[in-house]
Amino acid sequence: MTIVLIACLLYLAAAALLIAQVRREPPGRGRGWLLPAIVAVLLHGSAHVLAWRHTGSTDLHMFAALSLVGLGMAALTTVVGASGRMAALGVVVFPLAAIVLAAYQGYGHTDGAPLDWRLQLHAWFALLGYATLAVAALFAVMLWLQERALRRREFHRWLRAMPPLVELESLLFRTITVGFVLLAATLLTGALFVEDMFAQHLVHKTVLSVMSWLAFGALLLGRWRYGWRGAMAVRWTLVAMGLLVLAFFGSKFVVELVLHRTP
Image 1 (tube, rainbow, N blue to C red):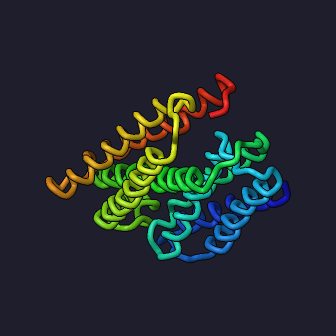
Image 2: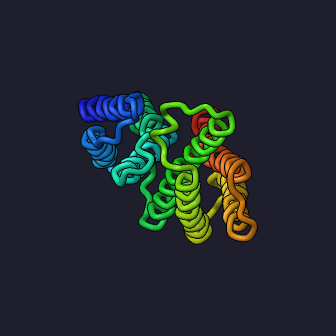
Image 3: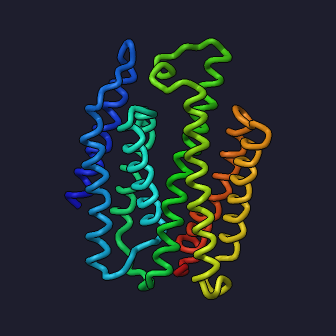
């Protein structure tokens, strides 16, 4: 509990420091937020490791999965922000990571069925893919907000804290490419290692995940072949991410919290 509380407070402290940077005139680019963010990520991960050691199994119920995805998003935001690009993303991601970690702690740890290395590999590909593509979705929202502000000639302070439009768009597509590869690995390992999708209520999850993967693939193809960008890229990204959220967390919500079944 102490580890979780400290991690949540450090996440909020990192977000507060980033907000203070954005509100400066001109917006600051210091790295005072970096140390609390790094420590928060390490403590967040430690909370899961300690829980797994206590239960003797890998806990991947809905709130645990949400917390792990939040951990992945926070870690990716910290790495990207440390390089001087898109640190402002932490204003959204760090409080979100604190919320899902607190929800995980509040819900309690579940003794899940032991997973062999193949299913664990599949699960980690999935969690990393979801975290990466979730960050890409946030990039897409920021891209849309930035384009909208520029069209309206609204030069807000937060706008000057963000990288140039072209750089943000390039970062969006690089992130989507990484997430697309991780999602492909998730689908491949699932096809190879999951024995009975019907018994494990995974058919709808697989169908929606494949649809999301195809949507992200179509976006990358459109970018390469037709130069898709701007509003087109934002729409495809958010639709594909919406399908992925339904595939994983939508199905987990119904199966675990509504039907009270073990996935």
